[in-house]
Image (cartoon, rainbow, N blue to C red; front, top):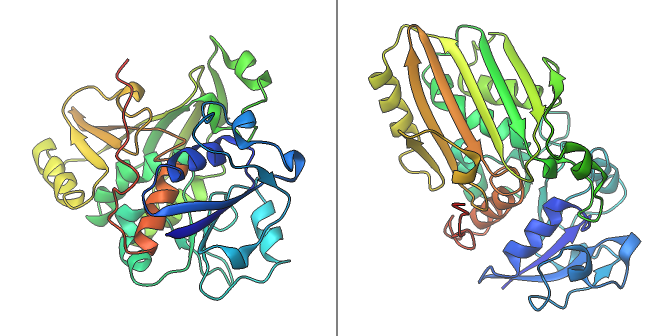
Length: 323
């Protein structure tokens, strides 16, 4: 069994990790770190786990006792932690914050998107930084174009994400109450995940220098990220669809579909659904993911499976919510 520890166990991402890992056939959760709730039952914070686990929160981080550590700390706290602790030589460390997503001096973290970096994770990587949820949806929508050097005109993107995209704990309801029956523009053109998006696209298309105009909205629904991206291209839709189908042919969670893409299609799954349309000279790409699963904890478990040589879908055959 793979022994796992979760650092920063109070937030939504940690809650989803616990729900996934207690049902993973090859994983045992050894500890869940949350000093503010030391000794308290995990199910008291992450509701729905009553009867599923008797885990209690701990204030300790014992990296020697586990094979893999998932870090769900807020921005800036993961790098601070790693500057103060000694990482065991063979420990797999999967960070869900934004601290290690972009290349930097001394940063040996693999960017954890299997649709791009599956080989490094399978071939012995120890440290993985998972993408942000908006970045994940945008990158999956654009990676096949980047691979084929087709990102040469301005890209216009609208993204909307559910209330669980914040780093607040499930017990905090203030943000949910404000966003209920409400939609607001959260960021226009400047987004914290833009750098990782451009870095990722340039890793396939080094010449990529087109403007990325991103509008990000906060939705009133609990979970999910939907993006719509468009750009001009002379290439026909049939040819573009073939490129997408070829790119994602051997990937287990990303699918090209003909029907309208909705958040409900992917809620509670680790899937990404992509629809391609051509209107005059504009290519429209719509993509949807669950921000807590494909956009965070589900992807982290996917990365763990790759690091330990497991099948990608183990522990991630999830029941979607159709209604």
